[in-house]
Amino acid sequence: MQANAEIVHTGVLSKESVKTDFSFDKPLQGHDAPATLAHYAFQSVVDVLRLRAAEQPDQLAFVFLSDGEALEQRISYGELYRQAAVVASALSAQNAPGKRVLMLFESGLEYIAALFGILMSGAVAIPSFPPVGSRALERLAVIANDAEPEFILTNQRFSRLRERVLAMLPLSFGEQGWIETDRLATDAADASDFDPGKAPSGRIKGHELALLQYTSGSTSAPKGVMLTHENLLSNCHCASSWMGGEQARVGCTWLPPYHDMGLMGGILQPIYEGFPTVILSPGHFIQQPLRWLTAITRYRVSTTIGPNFAFDLCCDTVPDEALATLDLSSLTDVYCGAEPIRQSTLDRFAKRFAACGFRTQAFGPCYGLAESTVFVSGKRTGTTPYFLHAEKDGLALGELEPSSPDSPGAQAVASCGVPAPQHDVRIVSPGAQVLADGCIGEIWVSGANVGIGYWNKPALSRETFYAVLEGHPGRYMRTGDLGFLWEGELYVTGRMKDLIIVAGRNLYPQDIELLVQETDARIRLNGVAAFSIDTGSNEQIAIVAELRRGERLGADELTSLHGAIVARVAAHLGATPHLIHFAPMGAIPLTTSGKVQRQATKRALLEQSLASYQRSRASQAEE
Image (tube, rainbow, N blue to C red; front, side, top):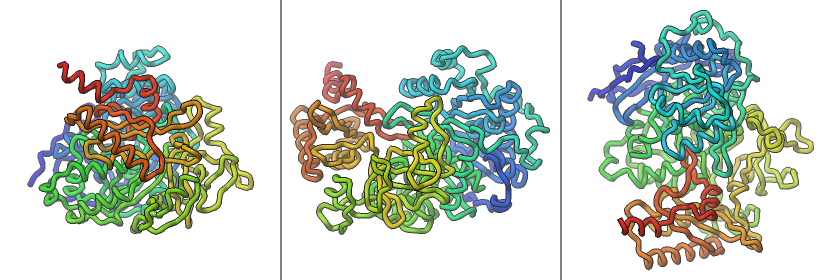
């Protein structure tokens, strides 16, 4: 069967070398690297792309499925470099080196070319998301006011939003500040400055600022993590070592390219490793998760990434009749991170898709955050994911009590593998003392992946990125996450800011949320937020639960569901929820990577601005 391949020719994407001769019956082939990258002295990921363009100009770099299924845009290393050089030339002409450039693009090849064009010019990239929808615009306003960009890089599609976007900025913007890449002349690149055939020029220094990676904002307002070119290279090198080094692979990603995991794992790592990668937009995946698995099947993907909820979503939405069309036997590395990893989810996915050739050992639980570029630790390739079973009561008291999986009080905690090479991970008490194995405390990280601070927040930067431990040289970054080390591997138990303390016991919101989701199928997947409410004398548990679209529950049914949730949480955790708020689908705010924003949900609930299922149903009845 021949694919209905289509190339959308827009501006710098309109070059003959973007190929369309692809058949779904012809799997992509992973490339061998031109040479081991360790033999080269790189200052930036731009140098890596320059090498690929010089030595492998016709090798396929990315395939973008513009409709999420069959319509393709393909690009080689040589063409990607040429497009990036067009953008770099335009920015250099406006004296952009060292200045901040806000990116407003959807997922796709244009995004990648723009990113490398910014880095190539010596400017500072600010990855962002398309300004579509009220929530996206609100988040964009926060980022724009914090970063104060001096240029905005976008395309003609978003020109209609120009005045609205510019109104968010604290500074006046000149005509030259707004640059649409699809209006740039395709021959604008200065060959003497951007010729990939030359040896790395060294014009970009490793210590220089490369980008501002904004945090997801799950516990507070998004903050711009300052990452240098050295940080990006270190992250790529560490991940490559963890993945088993350069080898023939085929990747696939639907993660947002403006999110740390999607940007580093879905764009920079494939270029560093030299393997072709298939890209879907996040929207196409959310609309129909089967598209992800279909792309893996068609392109014989070996490497992909996704958060925990993505695997649950596949189990819930992929119909039985589609299983016969899927072949997941090519998958060797499926990296899972960005949110708590549940054994029940991985087991469920492995069982559901075993008949499609999926193997459990392909799962690779990992841990990271924007403050460390992304990568902190991960399961080594080829090993089976491991879950340590511990007594819930011990975890509630901040202590590890290993137990049998059959114990009625056992809880499975995912191993996030071993720390990145040349990085030091410590578990630290509130008094800044290093804790022994098995003790729960804050996770601190030191190493070249760690960023240099938050943009324009010196006090918070000192507190977060420049912590010190007596007897340990160098600086440490405080992650704000709780966890423990056990037999050389890292286990993450939750966020410090989200921790619920009731009667001296530590309760993790993700455990409460899972219990609520499992109570009734009418509660939406990834639609529960649990947090504490301070009454002045103690803390009490509050829960917001979204009901699936189309559910028609009356008052008696809601009362019954309320009682079932209270009973389940009390039975499993020994604590009783004080408040349960039922909300319509979409009420709970999410981060750009799909994580529940518990603190934002809490604020909305306390301010009585959170949508209510009861009020929503009443409005529908009146209509």
